[in-house]
Image (tube, rainbow, N blue to C red; front, side, top):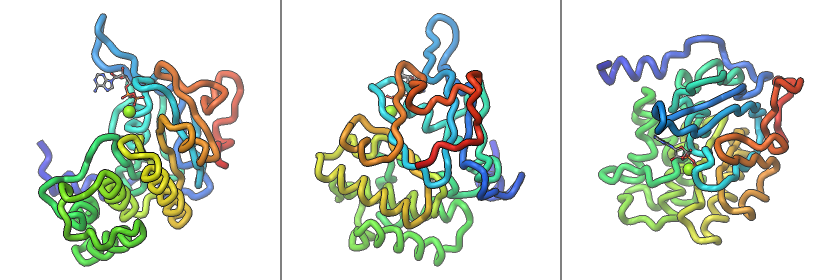
Length: 257
Ligand code: ADP
Ligand code: MG
């Protein structure tokens, strides 16, 4: 079992190539993830080939169980593929080697209930060895950006759903990521609140010059993003993102807006 200090060092260590701004943020080819083995195996994702260009704005749609969360978790480096290639050339290799280069807003509630809003937002920065004053400043700026600076001392149980989702966004934005993955960020919100969250997310991505992939069930939310990728039964529909390199697509071409 690695000690927390070793783990922090491993995450923070900038190994491999330096991020090259000319390269796409992420590419994958033939990507797959199966859970379990034998007769009970579940193929969550298979044969996904795509490129995420800088400043891309992508809606990832598809029915429940089609593999959206599993694909996003692999893109964040949190889930290991069982087949295929996945790399982050524009981020220098692996997203976790450069803290904050990829930020993910999880599908379910993800705030730590015992910590205040400000502590929740600054925690990832502290784990990546930011100084406490830098982490506090970045957290305050992110909360201000999302218009919830006055909630800094609140506990998660005191927040509405929309406020909690903004705090989860602030926690991602505080690290100034180059790629933001948001997994059904409006799924638990009413329509108007959901829209406000998407608007603020798009504005924050513009401000950070970041790429954004949002999974959503809501066609109106999806229409706000310039690219649409559709998943069915674990794979991307070819007409909506899957580049299919076996058909001669150039993987370096990018898929930005
Ligand atoms: P979506 O986000 O589109 O609803 P998911 O990626 O969550 O889809 O799930 C895709 C499929 O993989 C589903 O059949 C789901 O039950 C299965 N799955 C996801 N995570 C796991 C896991 N940790 N163990 C077993 N099966 C899983
Ligand atoms: Mg999901």
